[in-house]
Length: 112
Length: 115
Image (tube, rainbow over all chains, first blue to last red; front, side, top):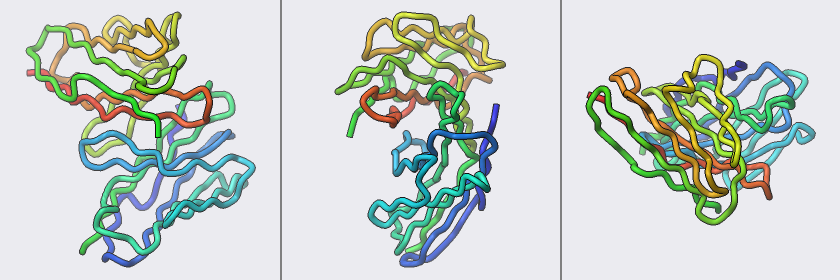
């Protein structure tokens, strides 16, 4: 099955800095979603961007989508220690029956 | 936001026993639920799609006789790991799709340790 790729795999930044992570995928999609996972916990939905959208904002989060390059980015501005977590992109493919395919994830460490 | 619960949150069992994990959508009806497993420091891998009132659809490589899924109501799906072995130790996460939205809501996960 298609598996998205995320980079970087790990990111370490100081509090207040911005964090950017990227996600690439392989097939046509209905939408792309970003999730956060704290260690050993479930996933928290952050933002959904549809295939006909190019950019979306939610609070300190900014997501872009480039369907021609089959890639997306997640920007967290003015990061906080509480943003420390793993971030995953997930795509809902056009032929996938609402199934989500997850990227490998980016582990973000925000140092106070 | 919508809430999905899982029970138990963690379980330790002996090799050869069976373990049942429940996934409930608490404030919405979910005709479709999904079961994932996640190994340490890895991503989520979809195991199967659970459809209310019909058989589950399993992903390639997932043994349907080992991972039994039952979706008997619009708010409950269960995953039973039969004859568990140490290699089945993992974090199992369910999600439920709210038919009113495009979003899947994830449960908090169940950590299974097989001794």
